[in-house]
Image (cartoon, rainbow, N blue to C red; front, top):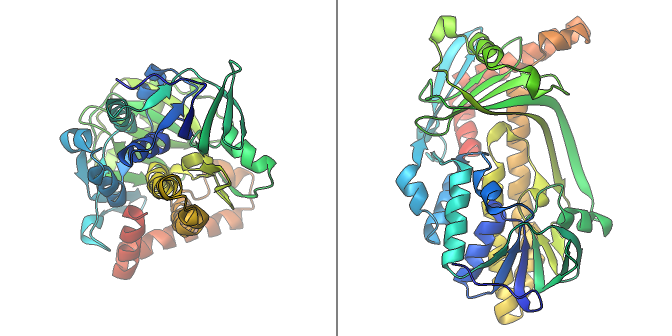
Length: 397
C-alpha cells in the first residue's frame, strides 16, 4: 500500500496526473529516494481502465526494464516487427525489425501498463490522491478543488494538453506551436482477434483504415471520417462493413469481427510548447506537447520525458544543482520534433484526398494529392534507403 499523504506537509515533487508520464516519473523519483505525491482528478478505476495506445518503442522498453517496471510487459506483452500497406495497387509488407536499427515494438495495452506502474508506485511507498481536481499551480503550491494546498519544492505537470499545468505555463507567456492535420479518425476497440499478423495501413478513396493488434482477443481499428462525426452514427454493422471495404477483404480475406467495446472520434492535431517548464514547474507527456496518433509516439515521448525529468529533479533535490533542469528542454525538444516530423510524414502518407474531399476541391488538386500519396507509398515499397529511414523513425524516439 502507498503511504497516506498529509496535505499540510511539504514533499519533494508534486506530480499532477497519473497517466504514463506521471507514473513513470513517480516511480523513478522513488527509486532515487525522493518523496513525491501524485494528484489525479479521476478515480482509480477510471485511471486503470482507460484504453489508449499499446506500442512501446525500444527506448521505452529499456527504461521500464532498467527501473524494475517491466514485469507485466515481459509476461503479457509481445513483440511486433512488421507492418503492411494495402491500396488499389496491391499489398506489401515491411519487416522493419530487419531494417534501420533493427528495433521492434513491444505491444502492451496502455491500460495494463498503467495498472503495473500504479501497483509498483504504491508498493514502493508512493502517495497518491485520486478524485482530486487541481485548480491552480503557483510556484511549488498546488491548490485543489477542496481548498487545500499541496506544497512541493517542484511541481511536475503530467495532466495532459488540457490540464492546469499547461494553462499555467501559457499564462506566463510560453508559446505553443500548433498544427491541425485536418483529419479525424473513428477509433474502434473490438473484442476480436487480430485479422493479420502485421500492423495494417489501408489507403482508399473512401479514406484511411488501420488495423492494430492489442491482445490475442482485442484489436484496435481506425477509420478516417469527416470532422464533426458523431460516433453514435456508426453502428457495429456499419463499422465492419466500412472496414471490410477499405481493408479490401474481397481481395485479401475476411476480418475476424466481434463486439465493439469502444468507439470515439479523434481529431488529429499536434502541438509543442517552446519551453516545457521553468522555475518550479516542469511538464512531461501531453502537457508538454500533443502528437497525432498516426505514428504511435505519444506514450513513448511521455516515457522519454519522464526519464529525463526524473534525472534532472533528482540532481536538483539531492545536490541543489539545477543544471539538468536548465537543459531539460534542450535534451528533449530535438527528439520531440523528430517524432513530430515523422508523425506528420505518416499522416501525409495515409491520408490522401477522399471522395468527399473531391466534392469540395478542384478536381485537379485532388488528383495531384492522390498521386503524391501513391508516390510516397511506391518509394517506401521500392527504396531500401527509404525503408531504413522509415524503420529507424518508426521504432525510434
